[in-house]
Image: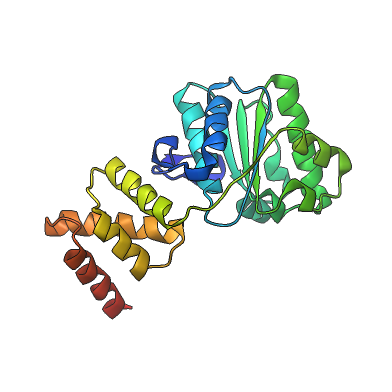
Length: 234
């Protein structure tokens, strides 16, 4: 895990290479450009929980770091606890990713801080990447200049995966971890577990550890056994 300022950490698994694009390939392609500096403007990602917003924002920061550029990932949940002043001092970065911006939309202190950050980035050639659950038109931003500047970037609606894409996404993540996840096992996980990708990927990580300890493959009987033990412990 890489340590970032303010104690915020990027997930090691949150990479472009582990994101199954599905219907979101255009957004993924553009974020590669933000990471390497070739994109001409910032971006706004919006979509429901489970569409991969946090994954993509963290992946963009990781890719920028890998390209020798400076990036910062700022989740608004953490910023709320720290106060609007925590958004100061990031204007010299090449890329700043603000996750869950709608968490503070309508709060004048935070809107002013994001507005100043946006302008500092523009002046120094940096880019701002934001994510929200709402479309730009549906977000109630009290500062008109901020709303217009953010919406002037490239806007992408992220779509959550369907079941076939969930299977592909799990198998992609498994391959990245050096695991083989058979189709029947992946479909069993969809039937047995909550269907959001955060839960599915969290369980895949746990199954990886269990398979290493038991020196067993991710077959349906083995996965059923592990899930059964977890139910008993709960």
